[in-house]
Image 1: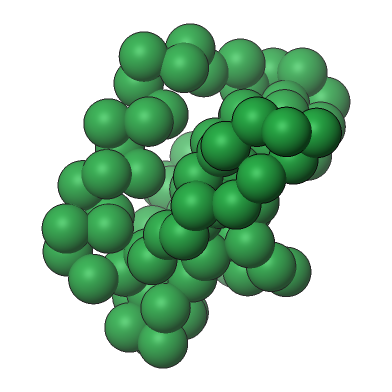
Image 2: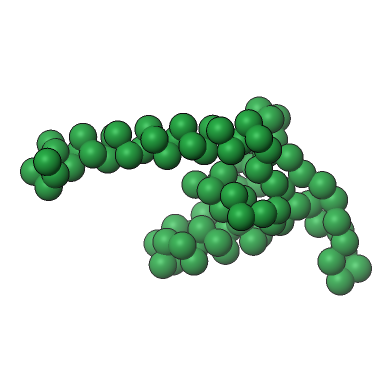
Length: 95
């Protein structure tokens, strides 16, 4: 989910949290203490890059999707489609 929020372009960590909330209709409200470590792990794995910028005189780190992150996101989406399809069938809601 974090990778998908970065697909349209670079965002700082708090904006990632807010985008997840917005997309989920406030159902997903992750604390900053979980999002920033996850972004750092994604960066260490090469799926996300970051750069320091200034906004209103304050430094903030913006995260962006790398090419490897884009490929990983496509794979995760395909995996999710497969899993959710199987679950729908098992629960009786799919073909």
